[in-house]
Length: 123
Image 1 (tube, rainbow, N blue to C red):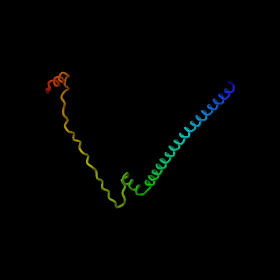
Image 2: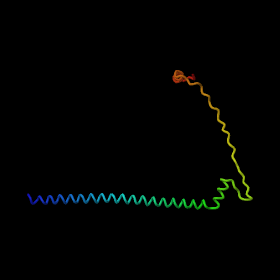
Image 3: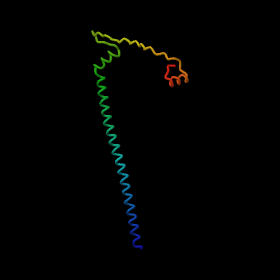
Image 4: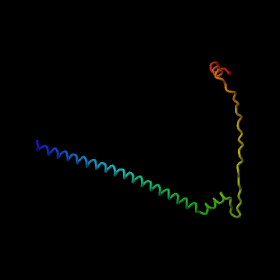
């Protein structure tokens, strides 16, 4: 009886150690998975930010061009080049003519509504 008792204790400790190692490895695997997914998300975000940065750089370069500055000066400030004639075309405001609205009669009493409902009359 005593000879099998140390084997059982040894087996119990062996199973406990195996379970501990397995659960620790699983937790580490989950952490690694989370870390890699976060890294991928951040890399994707960095790529998107680089694209946005490039777009903004292109806009800044466009805004620095003389043609853009000239166009904006003409539109915003009403400036013109020497010898250039400006013609302004405006639209006439459309008159808002409202269709005549039907004048409603005074509200009908509940009794009149029931009479009209039952008999289908025009009362």
